[in-house]
Length: 288
Image 1: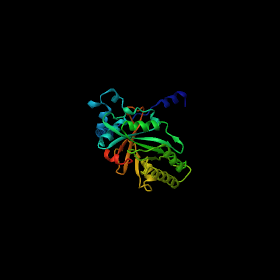
Image 2: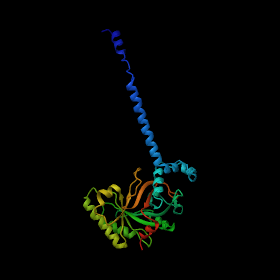
Image 3: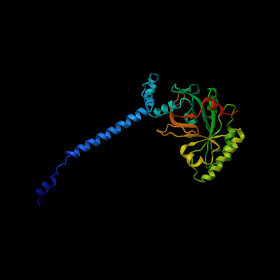
Image 4: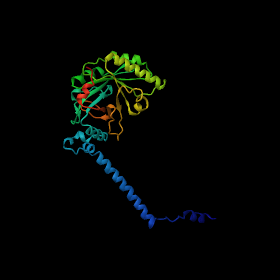
């Protein structure tokens, strides 16, 4: 075969088959159905989050300032959840990660939902005190908030030493919330059963010292997998940030529903929590 003939053969193109008749009609119909389904889904989502979306885009007369226009999409869910539980009590939890807080400005979530309580990280492990604990502990109370202290538990450290360290650094007064044990980590050098023994030792020692039963903080998966069965006598503060979760379960004492809230007086993000009850019921939870 000559080069000329080979070139002609290589340059031949197969004719493009075009859909005609029923095939073309079916393709257009499927495209229409797909587009219509997407539109319906967007309408449903938009209708479900209409309160949050109107807040986010500043459509409400009370939300048309410049600050509202810069809100993130996460605030859609935050506002949606808060509006759903407007009869509950809203609070925050903080640590040194929030920097120095101007507690006099910590009043509400966008002037709509008053902040009534604050959990403050006191200690971590057997030897670390939060660098801002003393300041936050003092000024949160001065600002009229119901305060509580929590300990970040390290599974690989001695539980008795951790409880002793927390007790040494935290003095509860009348009106303070119960101590909180924050457990989020799975131990890499001991069994889950051994971890549970350590947690119970911490809880027992702290309970005995303060004469008030501690609360356990953890995320929902950790609670269901490791703690639900063996710690039924304790009340739980549960973290779940799932965008599509808007329901607080009956057995949650507190629900930490976001870690991305904006509050006047606090730089950057802060956690928001809902107490599963009224303000009167929350005060009943405190030390007497």
